[in-house]
Image 1 (cartoon, rainbow, N blue to C red):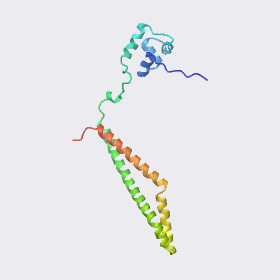
Image 2 (image 1 turned 180 degrees about the vertical axis):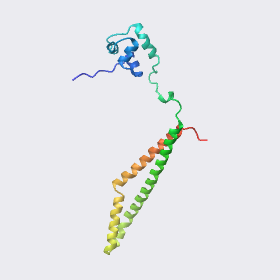
Image 3 (image 1 turned 60 degrees about the vertical axis):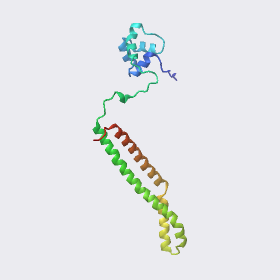
Image 4 (image 1 turned 180 degrees about the horizontal axis):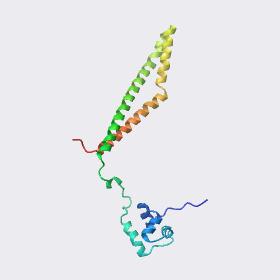
Length: 178
């Protein structure tokens, strides 16, 4: 089994990784082979001063240590049309999910009310047809409050919250209306 190599922290490796270059590409810039670049990165060889000049020019563009990179800082302002379309989609679907959640909440509340009301009713229902109806209602109330219903409720809530958060982020990116 081969040994795992330790990532190089040499200037050449740092520059190469920052600019997304392969060892071959960096070698082309410096007029070296891929193997020569690999030897320098491994610390087995050094660049000559003349070869090192293009590398140092690139190294001048490296960020200061611990400086957070914000890729969006270099982007043009976003086109409003796709953002507005996505905002509309998010708002519409979040509202639809909230309506489904409200309907499910109502069903859960009704089932909870039945569970509270049924024990005394069952105790007072001597005739068989009324008792059978109440028992079916009790089974339905239990089914309406099971784990599957709870999962459906929470999934609706989470999906709506996610779409609402995305809509808020999109609205912040768009220029103010007016």
